[in-house]
Image (cartoon, rainbow, N blue to C red; front, side, top):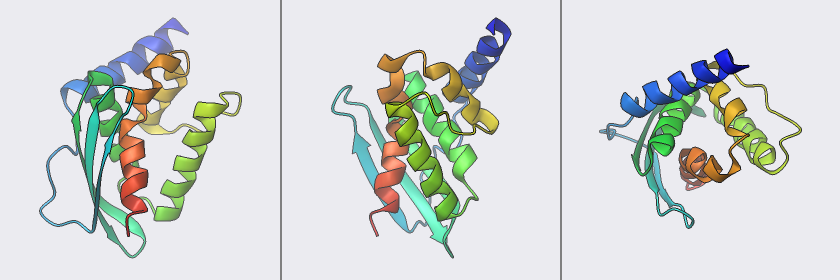
Length: 140
């Protein structure tokens, strides 16, 4: 398990230091900002949605390295998905944060969430981008 934890930490560190999707979009169809009441961290998100598909996403995070890394991972994994698939992922994550017995099927860099379950005090940072994404999708 130690080797797996090291790999997941490496993924988080890579996204924290080399965030993807953090440049503002020139054109977008949805946007929102979410601020954590617990930490004060903020995430401003912009989406370009066409034909029920997320074709472009950008998230600017003002907060911890973990919040930045998780927002970067979220953007990388959600871009190109249908809104239905994104809504399913959002529901699974919301359920998982309340009941860690039923883990969603993690794919790609979302595997980092397997290790984050052991640190409930960090979930606020880990979920910052997701809360902004959910707010942006429901804004129109």
